[in-house]
Amino acid sequence: MIKKFLLAAVFTASVFTAANAQVMAATETKTMTKEEKAAAKAKKEAELNEAFTTAGLTDEEQVKMCRAALDQSNEKSKAIRADATLTADDKKAKLDAVNKERGEIMKTIMGEARYKIFKATQKAQKEAAGAKAN
Image (cartoon, rainbow, N blue to C red; front, side, top):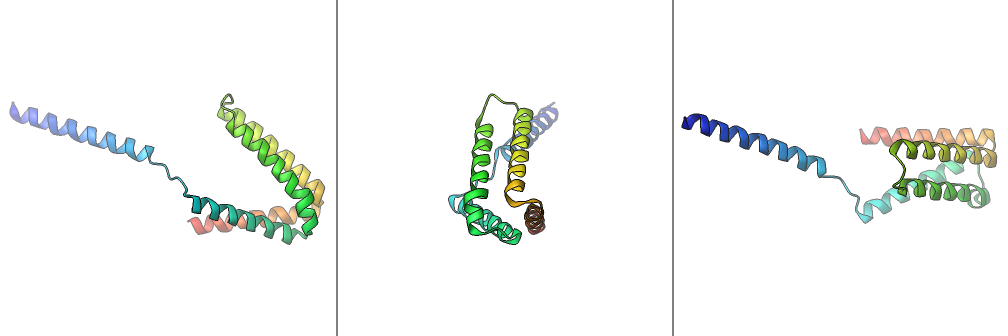
């Protein structure tokens, strides 16, 4: 009888420990430090500048036209992400629409040929970053 009780107690404790470990692992999220955020932002900016340069945009075109379009779409995206009344599917649909609109504006500003070069450069940067992560 005591053996059964001890066995049941050990089994219950191990189940509780395993369940607790899973909950703790699920709640641990990696948050970026200020330095990591700043480094990520600087890297993103450098990659964007490289893509603009590769596409043959002048500094004036970058600042006056492309940056304004990017800033505007980023503000729209932030507002959509912050809207707690939207479901995840609604947010995805709205963000996709904003991204498509941004792409059309950028294509109009740059022209078809330079836009293709710009997107190809961004794709290569994304693949290179993915290769580094793996």
